[in-house]
Image (tube, rainbow, N blue to C red):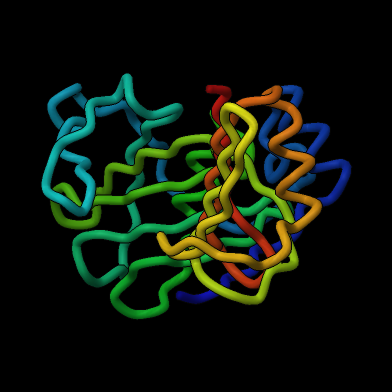
Amino acid sequence: MGLFRRRRETLNEQLLREAGIDPAHALGDPKPQPPPRFEPPKSVLEVVGIPDGSRLTPKEWDATVTVAAPGLVGNRIEFTTIPNGDLIVDEETGDADLSSFADAVEQRLSPPYRATAQRQDGDLWAVAAKRIQVARIPFPDGEKLELSHHAGSGELRVDGEPSDALVPPELERLAETAGESFYVEAERIDGDLWEVRVTAL
């Protein structure tokens, strides 16, 4: 797993982008621009899979794009973009700059999100991304937390095993949004940053 920090967008660039204006063109940036992206046929998007080999169709993602990205090695890349725009790389061969993937996704979807990129043909990649909820939970142990409460009894599990550790207050606050019966699952992204899913029972 690695961390990649992207160049920060200025306020002027953000306002121009949100208004549908290319910041580089409007601000007179002389740098060459990447080739325009295009929408692939549906069959291209459908080949983005998940690690167990099953297939996910576009409707199961919040954003799907194709990107021309020369210089990358391997055929599959998985990464998470956290709220400040940094990329946490889960799976990649090498350590190439993935900004082109994140920039393309963020034309349609704001961070935080998880994304999978799959090489299609040559330098053409299909990228699919899904929104996630992220929380900062100071908890040093484990990679996965599960907190459940139903019919007056509750349980905390760490990496699938029952735990008598104190429930982090941040996790309890998330659970409160689901009512009296709930299931909260948290998977560590990096450090104290976790992807969380809250389900009312």
